[in-house]
Image 1 (cartoon, one colour):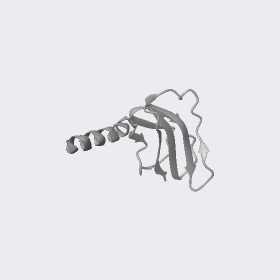
Image 2 (cartoon, rainbow, N blue to C red):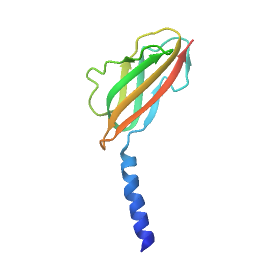
Image 3 (cartoon, helix red, strand yellow):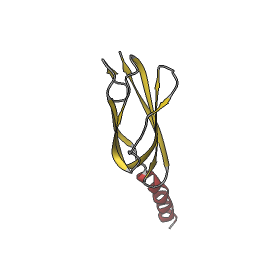
Image 4 (cartoon, rainbow, N blue to C red):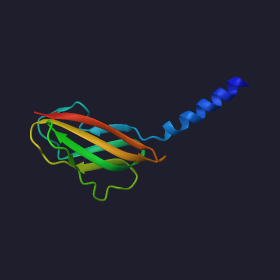
Length: 113
């Protein structure tokens, strides 16, 4: 009986994590080295998410929030235009709201030579 209760409690505790929206892929990929800055960034999620902020930091400069415009609905793929800031390290930080109501955040970076 104790084993059944423990299994049930573990299953319930894991359920919210299953609903979170992990990033499946980014373009450019995390750690990529590019010859020129991309015209856009793409974030693809495993489950639907609503983005609330995308922030770009270039070579320890002042962070710039990207304009999400009409991209505020729940979706699994987001394409956002990116201004060319020249060569250097681009760090992209994102925040969003997953379908289960939890706040999600993460970051990726790429370098332009």
